[in-house]
Length: 112
Image (tube, rainbow, N blue to C red; front, side, top):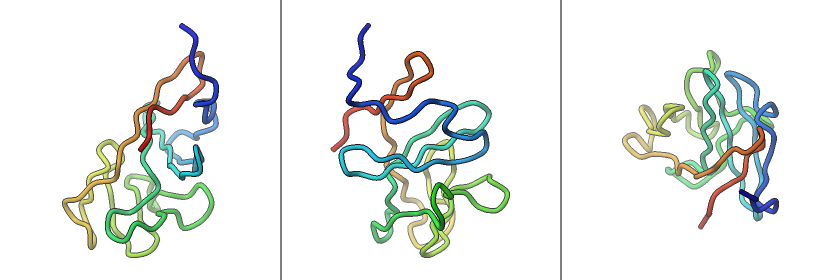
């Protein structure tokens, strides 16, 4: 199967294990996270005020790298679901982004 190379965002090794990386696609910002070899991609926008989450480039995780941290208001989100468990947007969730992997390269799915 031939994939649309214009949807390419990064190689799987560009995302560190128990780490995160900011991705840009079609002028939108996303965050990619990897834990236990599983990759999660979310839109880089807190559901509370719509602001980006990172506190420094590629830094989306709390100190022990167990949760996603919003740098603006300290909201905490589960890595595997994007569900907010603490902060002003509690019980809301980050927007999950569809993606696929081919030959260790990540391609973003349809975005709106």
